[in-house]
Length: 367
Image 1 (cartoon, rainbow, N blue to C red):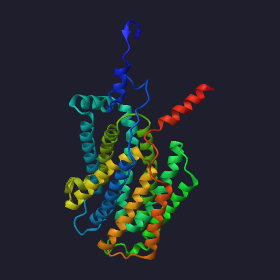
Image 2 (image 1 turned 30 degrees about the vertical axis):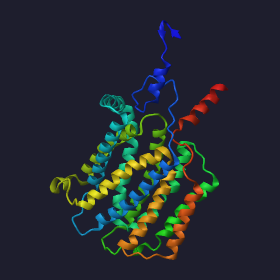
Image 3 (image 1 turned 180 degrees about the horizontal axis):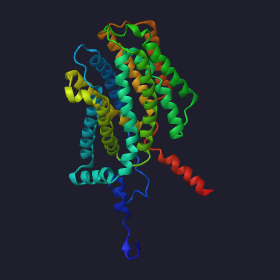
Image 4 (image 1 turned 120 degrees about the horizontal axis):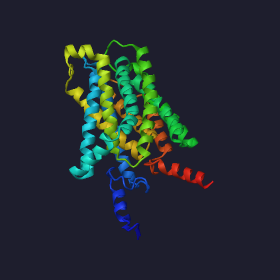
């Protein structure tokens, strides 16, 4: 068929829409976003890797913050983590687009040509930067077990943010599983005074204050990023690049404000060891897998993965820091496992939140 003497080209439009590169603007306003068929096995793989990385990260971070060597600047570590995540995301996007031309076009359109999108992703960047620095501050002033137990308040906080910000509903059984998870984690790390043999000067009040801020940041930033990620068909790695670019700026400001004078005197990489670089690497890989988990499941499932990581890190503490397996640990581990089972595996498709909004708009327009 023709319109105004020009032939229509629906096939080309469909192919452009099917491409995973966000430079296909011609069809964005006329067709629904393509559905990404992701298997349950892939979701479980991402959750498993994220769990293992998080468990290793907690142990490694605690070790680097309680060693008798020169203490490195946590703000610089957070900043370098953002840089590494940006570089990894750029590399993955380059592989995803397939050739240099499409890669440049995607960056030009979605990064250089989208200041509004960069500003939108600067919100979670700012909040995540605060959260990461609060985690360093908390772990410097509290034992790892106390930190882990208290930090689990982020699970019901995240669930509440999911309900309020994404208009989702959780069944009574799922709410029970969320709070059961919190109880299980608390029992897993009961009697935290035995959690480490290392004696360091700490400020518990400052540590608990830092955890409270980190809990609020975790719930809000995670759900906000999920909403942005699932509200359009823009590539996950483009979104990551947008967020990490603003994240680098935010963390550099934090470096200057918190430790600027000392860094000028001692150097940006003062106190860095192989273990510090391991912590940075684990944080970077964990950040990428977190974004994948959020994209293909949700933030609550991410919380359950983190709880499983706590069980693993506590078991590791038995060997590294002299913890003993107790009855409360066994009961807590059982509760964590049961809560994960009750909440359910991530079988349903949650990669997009557009469908519900579109149906709602259609119902309104129909009336």
